[in-house]
Image (cartoon, rainbow, N blue to C red):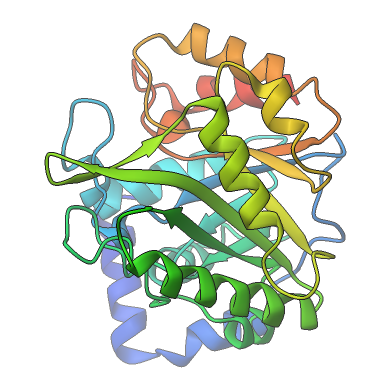
Length: 294
């Protein structure tokens, strides 16, 4: 796969203008994976759905993910590494990757609710403005992911909770994975901040696991916290670890991930900014080190 540069972006734009149906043809013709998990028996995904929620920061750069050429280049490089099973993203990013030829035989998870824009008064009322279950099924994606934040003081939580339950139901009816990413959250100085205490993560996991009338296709996407044994004891659902923010101490971050991966409930990782924008900028090295843990 060649690097994504200005010429590649120009070709994407030209295709969208002159032959927009190329995207539908591409999804129909794409080779799909035989399983959700790779040769390791675990799932390794790169996440790229942050921009659609207006969350563009990576490390010290507040607009890092706002440069689409850079983002696509880093994604293509990550997806080309051995052991990377696929990607999680919104339609704009996934359609770009499809046209670039980067999604053959890859697990593709569509991001469903991106309406809770970062820093807004309506952030917790996280509307489903991205993929819906029928589109995920029709494009032969392997599942859908939803963000479910519980803010005890914000009534918008219940609307998001109901919408997530409905999405889990529809995905299960289609036999597709529902990846639920739950948090207990609170507003501090105008920002929504996630509570990463053990008790909060346990509570959010148990609520998320109980959504809808079936859990047959539900996976939980959970953050790595200090007491992961207690967190993972809270559910019998498959868990993928959330990579989280870019850490200045990547070795310590990797050590935490590696320890959590020892638990039998952990069936993979979904990592975005930590792999795409690692300290030092070596995407391939960051990806390879993470794959080695699996």
